[in-house]
Length: 311
Image 1: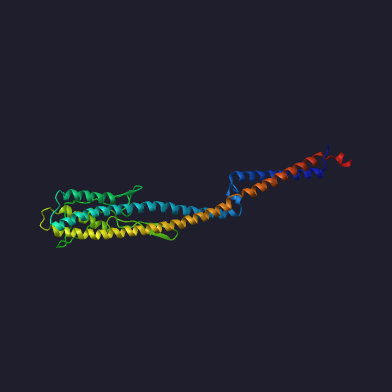
Image 2: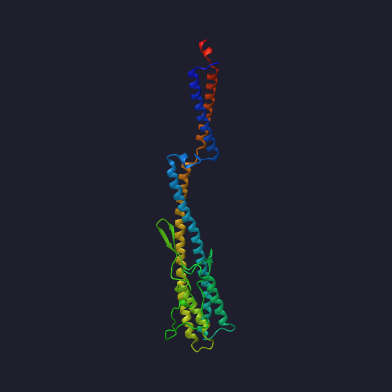
């Protein structure tokens, strides 16, 4: 049998349509399986650039959220240390008040052992680390910030029974207050250093207790200086606690904003790259019907011959 030239051209046209139909069907089957409109950026045509931009923004938001989580851990740890030091301060105040009231140490109290325990607590709470970083050392995060000198040496008195600030007696960090970026254009200073006056006055008060002999003629005057320092340290610790708490609230608020932004970006990304199952199924069914029709036409064309055409 001999096919007419026109039939041959038609046959090739139908075969080309069949190939295109099969390609579209394969693409739609992949869409249904993966739930994505395309497997590459190129397959998204004009939306590819938009998707790249939105994904880049989302990665930046994820970085901020990750840093916020780390920052919260550091600030919570700092807050725990401050809270623990308030207990150390309270115990020290009780001893000092007893001496001021009675003019001598309470029976059974070894003030040297007491002071050694309390300075050890201060060291433990201010030498705390998070992920290998010392939290109260400023930018010297690999340096233990609190290493007291000889506790038997008295603080420097100013000619009376008032002492002067001496953070260098124990502090090995620097003056840098650590900062972090919470969001674009939003920065927070969160770092506390162990030479803060509230901590220094607590250390100085403990030092007075440790260096003052039990039979010192001026024990009440010296302990009164310790009591004044402890009162100031207490006010300072409460201020630090409030400051850290306020920054934690700021961190939480910024975190909510970032989460809202991320959800919005996720919605945009989903709209760009996620295939609509109903639409994809409809397109697949339509392509199947067209493919079946194309096959039917191709079969009819293949049955036509010049003899049949002339007859």
